Length: 264
Image (cartoon, rainbow, N blue to C red):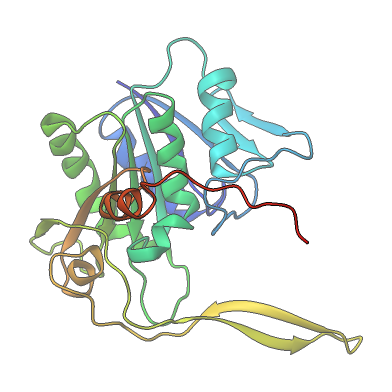
């Protein structure tokens, strides 16, 4: 099995090293193509206004001066020698990618790009502690359970056009893992904010951050599972159509549109 890895925390991220160890427990045909620098929150953005620069680390490791979507696209179409990957793993992200954050996540976007290219894809993220210091030891839970969980998911299979979004809770590696298949949740509070600051020249700027405030998500959601210490597996797709609204709007707009006459 040929596996391609990417992330949004950058080529040097401890989570990517953990993901490579997970992948190597599944296969010896592992390729890595990740952003040169952190691309968190870039979602599915493409680099369109400047060239994509690729740094070849070795024959199977590449760093791209671009986004996770750029990385997957380039790897599949240009950089991976021979057959295209059988599986794409994106992560392991430092911090949850759950709830409404999945629409902004570069980790999830890497998996979506793989899905769009016809390759089964999984995003993996590790919940982080309140101190928010990136410690390689924090990825031990994801690393302890990642390979077995991916194996089980591949055996079960999932539809074309769907990615799987895995979130690991904060638990010790020797914990007896509980896995819950969840739906995407939504936080009942807004913890993202922009803090006003002043630089050394007296000019204003803003720094986006998050307040460390846990929400109270509903049962059965990715957020609830993570807060309660369970591994969350959420099937996601990019069809954002709201089916019920199609019906109501179609009824409201059943009459042909009228053309307004010239203003008098």
